[in-house]
Length: 72
Length: 152
Image 1: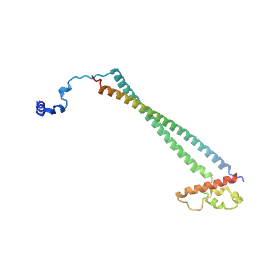
Image 2: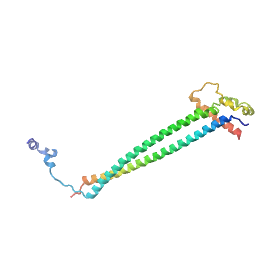
Image 3: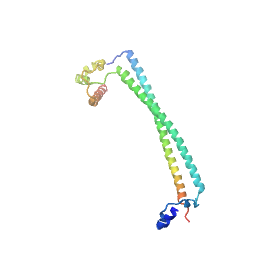
């Protein structure tokens, strides 16, 4: 059995649904941006980790060179 | 003068004495096997630390951007909630279907003939505590599933 509703209400609901869809799209794009930023952060952290281990290696080498000179 | 007295008086303790200023001036040499590499490593380590510090600045910027984006997301979520709760819900039937469930025992034809406006009527029963919301939802779900079966 069909249901009849007022055209005004129908239009209002359509407009609200449109607005909701727009907001959802906005939220989705914002979430994507946050994800990108998070990936960037992760990448930066990884780079830091690599840099620190490189520096650590170099300092170890320097330390080794200074503290353990060639034995005669 | 005092030092010399101590040294002569304590005999063997001479070896445990801290390095005196005279010893400090002795020019011992330490051989470094690969001086170029040591220098290179020091410079490279410095360079990498500077890059690290630059990365920190970038990281801060990224975090600020992320904070702004998170705030925007929160605002979007609030706006969505407001749209659905305050505007859309006014036009849609209310979720409390308890009244309908009791009427479900009526013959099928009578249930179908019920006007849709009845859904909008507030339930006469007092509001139940939040703990029963889950049960309500389950009931609603069952009701919806039943309706879907009827439609099929």
